[in-house]
Image 1: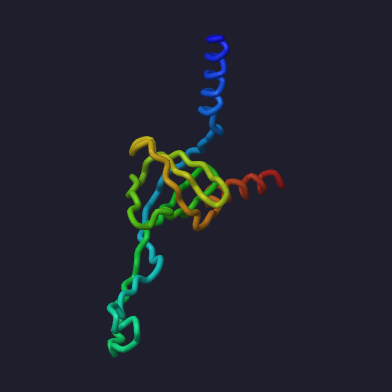
Image 2: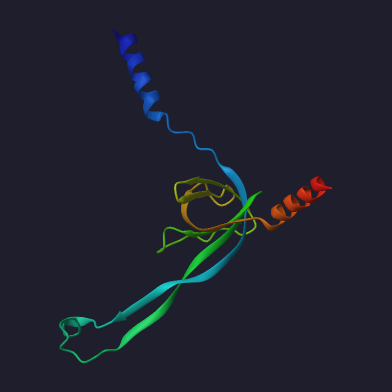
Length: 144
């Protein structure tokens, strides 16, 4: 009876540990820019401001900045922003990263920095300029 119980326990343990395999592609973080991503407004605070009794119409507004990274791979250039807006980590520029894309999100792993996977929003994707130039050169050579 005990060997069967042990076998069942091992099977259950293996099934719970089995996860979907994650395959990462490699790329390089080329640059990081601060871009405008919204406006933070403060004003009309207090009971008088909320009820409209107070005549103070003074509203403080300041431009918010977000980090935007340029990630280059062998074929594409991705502009990405961290999903976490409150406390995003500053990643090392010029280093190799591993990434995977699921739906509309990019999951980034920086082996040199730490082993934490961070979630990013893909802002834009463009084909690399040198990749398009090499394709057009190959097409011109094949036409001759």
